[in-house]
Image 1 (cartoon, helix red, strand yellow):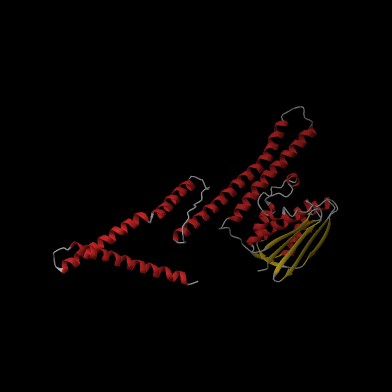
Image 2: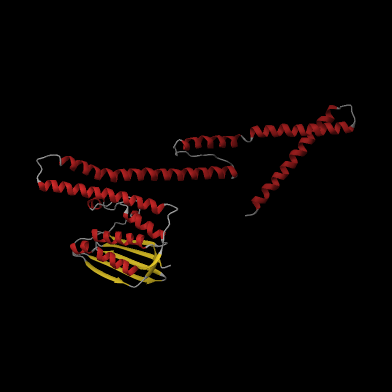
Length: 344
């Protein structure tokens, strides 16, 4: 493994010595062949000067011949940078060289940089497209029903129904905006999370009780086991996690289903398990449920006013607290979320 780095400098040194010897040898034979009638000292000086001239001439020839590939690399990189500056990330430097050197490393890093920039641009375009789509849908409903309200022939019940739809869609827009701001704030590098020690079991119990109108309306069976656990975390952010997961479980569980919530302390971690007997998530969808705007069931999520941001926020909050969130699910049998958080 160590031979290659040692051989290259040795070969370079040998080549340099041969270059000098060859230049002065040619100069010596040239001066001697001319039979210049002068002293040996003058011929010695002329040999040195001629040798230096030969070295200079050969160096200039090498400069114009050998670096052409390097100049081409430079020109190609400059051209590619101009394209990138104009927003075109569809560039790739395909430069073949016989051996790896600083230029091949530069080309590799350049191509990697362009690839990363292209991925970021694709994500930005997808984000804009998703936001536009999410905003367009409720706006269309609001405008449509607002126009319908202008007709005087509508009954009072119809007017009330249209106003309710407009209010629902307006709240959906407000929630989308709020979630986008939350996600942007959480993803900011300078986001400061203030943590305190607080009873996690009490927080979960409070959120479950606050959700009673939702699960009692669907007549869900609840199984709750909460050990006393003190967690060092941001209680407001963690409240968003439990609220989102519990509300999702209730939302996607049919009437007379079952909701199970466990809390235990295990290996210096708080382990929260939230299970339901709802519609479940397919194996195809599971890897993507924490991505922004991803909806495993488009029709069902839209009918419930979801934006596809809730689980992204949950994942980000858990990551901020150095925790892990896992999902187990089967279509038609339900879903289980397991959240593990370090106590300290």
